[in-house]
Structures are given as C-alpha cells and as structure tokens.
Image (cartoon, rainbow over all chains, first blue to last red; front, side, top):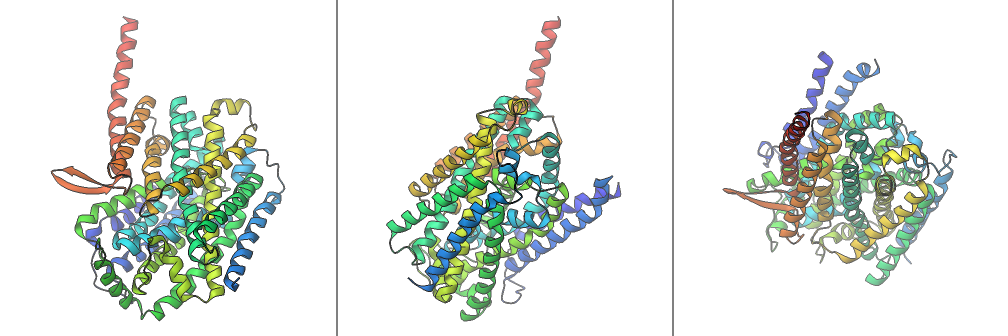
Length: 64
Length: 496
C-alpha cells in the first residue's frame, strides 16, 4: 500500500513545469542563465531522480 | 573537396554500410515480423537507451527547435517541459503497454486496440492515424538532411542538395528494407556518440567566443526584439497557456507514435523501459543546450533567409572545417536513424492492421514481413514527397501537426490500458471529432501555425492537439452512456 503511494510522486514534475507563472522570470540568474532557463534544466534532472526513486521503490513489488 | 566534406561523406556512407551489416546481428530469421520490426524483443538497457535516444531526439531536436528559438524566442523552450514530463508518463503507461504486448504478441497499438475493444473500425482508425501522422514527421527529418547539405558547402547548389537528399534517402530505404530495426539500432550508437561530441564541443567553444551566457541572453533579447515579428527570451503571460499546452500535448503524443512504440516493444523487459525513463532525460539536457544554440546564433549576428539555416551556419562559423564535417554528419545521421524507425513503425501498422487484422494474423502468422518491407519504402517516399513540396515557416510545424493527429488515439490506446469503460463506438466518434477539430483548427491558420486562438470570452491561444483531445474525450465520454442506454432499451424492447 505504501509503495502504491509512491506513484503519486510522478505528478510533481507536471506541477513544477506546466505552470509558467511559477518560473517565467529573469532573476535570480545562475551562471548567466535567467531563472526561466536554469529552473527548467534543473527540473529535467529532478524529474529523472523522481522517476528513479519510484523505480527503485516499486521494483520489488512488480516481481512478486 | 574540403576536409570537412570528406569526413562528412565517410561518416554518412560508413553508417550506411553498418546499416546493411546489421542484418547479420544475432543471425536470426528476418522473415519474422518480430525479428525484422522489433529486433526479436531482445534489447537490454544500454541498446534501448541508444535506440530510444536515437529515435526520440531527431532533426526536431537538432534543427527545428533551435530554429524556432532563433526565430521566436522563449516559446520554443516548451520542448524542455515536454521532454521532462514525457518520462514520468512513459514510466507508468509504456511499461504497462510493453507487458500487455509481450503477453498477447502485439506489434502495434492497433493490435492492442483490436484485442481490447474487438472493433475492426477502431483498429483501422488507430492504424491510419499512425501512418498519416508519421509522414510529416519523416518530412521533418528529410528537411533536416537537406538543410545541412545545402548550408554546409557539401552540396554546391540547391539542385545538387536535392539530388544528394534523394541518394541519402535511397540508401536509408535500402538498409531499412534489408535489416529492419537492427539497422537503426546499430547506427544509433554512432549517431548518439557523434551528437554528444558535437554538442559538448559547441557548448565549450561557442559561448566563450561570444562573451559568455549573460551576454548571449541579452544579445539574443535585442535581436529578437528587433525582428519584424518581435520575440523575447522571456515568456510573456499571453503565451503561458500556449507554452503549457504545447508541452503537455506533445508529451501525451510522444510515446504513441508508431516509431516510439516500435522501439519500446523491442526492449527485453518492462524493467528496461522503466530504467530508461530515468536515464533518457540526459538527452533532454542535450536538447535544451541545442535550443540555446539558437540564441547563440542570434548573438553571433547570423542572418539567414530560413531560420532552419541558423544552426548549420553557426557551426560553419565557429568550428574548424574538419569538425564542422563531424557535426553535419551527426545531424544527418541523427535524422536518418529516426526516419528508418518511423518507416518501420508505420509499415507495421499498414501491413498488420490495414491490409490484415490482428485476428487474421494470429491465425496465419509471419506472412506480412514481405509486405511490411515494401510499405516501409512507400512511407519513406511519402515523407520525401511532403518534404519536397510543402514549406512551412518553421519545420517544427510538421511535427506539431503530426502530434495533433496522433494524440487522438490516446483515449483508445492509453486510457484503454486502464479501463474498458469507454464504448468502442464512442471512442471511434471521439477520434473522428478530435481529428476533424485538429484539422479544421490547423487549416484555419492555413497550416502556418499549430497554436489556435480559442475565443471564449477571452482569447486563449493554445496547442491544437490539446484542444482537439478535449473535444475527443468529451464526445467519447458523452457517447458511451448514450450507447449503453440505447443498447439496454433495445435489449429490453426485445425481451418485452
């Protein structure tokens, strides 16, 4: 049951990247990149990490 | 002939040889559709990573998205959330699709739909949509090849670029015919390696010569603001919804394209797919960097008649001649790999679900590979015809239009994985309504753009695929209870 809840984590990247008012601004900049750009690049990595976490947490259950 | 041209030709001809040799990989009987089209469903995590990366990141990534950024600014970066959310989505649904396909022997989405809903018309609808939506996507690949040939100095004139495109295309068709999915799977290793080398080199060399990223962003901003149709490096509120709907609509469409399904089903296990959903985003970072090269081209004051030329011209300006040859080969091979898989995917649909049905194939197996091979050639020819005749402002519109069509099979294929609540005729009605809406909206802008200004009190510009999918779902959801009710009353009348 606890592991099933894990799948809900997969919704986080949708909420973080599909609402432009959250991130369509210039500052704070990072390495010359406006916030709009580095925020979205960061979410590529974070989303991949979330997918890996869900994969690791649900792998066993799938084998049963 | 320059050193760059020699390197380019050696690489492109080399992968063609590799494509033919791929037929011997594993030495299996390529007359079986599972072997020719799906590589025997035996690919592990690493082969699948290269294959799916080579399949999903195409001339769209290398030419069309940076050209869009070069011409319009921030809106082009919808491709970043698109290729971010596609993976959590695929993690759930594609692993499930793989499992169903393995258990029941599906080769296509239409196989699944036939088996699930026992409806021949729905199977035909899904198959036809797949074939039709793939053609403009292939055209986009061929435009990528043509653009490179024309701007790299490899083909001296426009006429010779078209001739070379046809030659490259003939080679592509020949090795796809011979080796099936093994050809792009093998070439994908070369393609992805060259692409990573090119992009890493570009990201090290170009920003340094242009005075760093902060300067590139501000120079790009000035250049965009000065355009006849001014753009900006910052997304403005009127475009928020267009941005989100482009990202979501594209993500929903990505994995139901025939070429994505083909690569997914060639994996050894559902776990290979799940793992890859965490590993493939590395390519999305690549995509973002390439899109930013569109801004580099603005900052470098590159002036071109066609925005598709921005990236080739940027490479010619900043790379030594021999390395530009490597970069151009990377783009061309990067377009030929997905074109081959697209042809295979569409041919599978045509041979398996249009000329035959899933049902008859189960009874008389392994006869359709011959047909599929020939149809793969026809599909490629169709893509070539589109590429040579239609010229939208941005090549990305080809892909966005294909996406608006393919996403209409989402309710039957993906929701169908989870529920049989929808009535098969309701799904068919929804599909027809969605397709009609998408096509009508696209032609209302004269196929110039796939962002439709919906008027509902306020004007809300959004991606056509998204609006049309809403119509599709609404029709399917309303028609389902109505059809059940009609059937029950008919049944009651008969009993009475």
